[in-house]
Image (cartoon, rainbow, N blue to C red; front, side, top):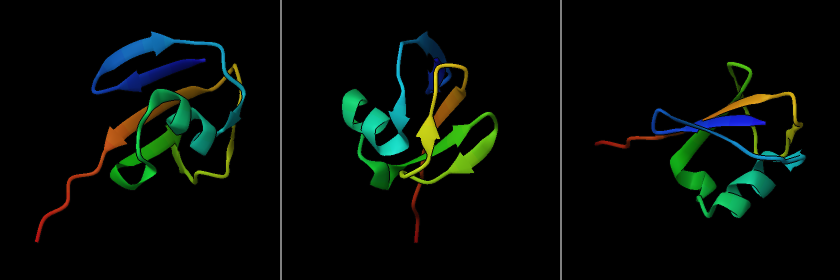
Length: 62
């Protein structure tokens, strides 16, 4: 699987849910959006080795 965090591309072997990926990477799901092949997914959606994942930080303001 190829994934991008903060414009840095990396590769790793992974199969599981988006939540499991975030847990493995030590990232809180409350501060990011996860895209699989260009579409936003939930933490329960599955990710497989062929997917391209993008993790984007959410900026909150008020």
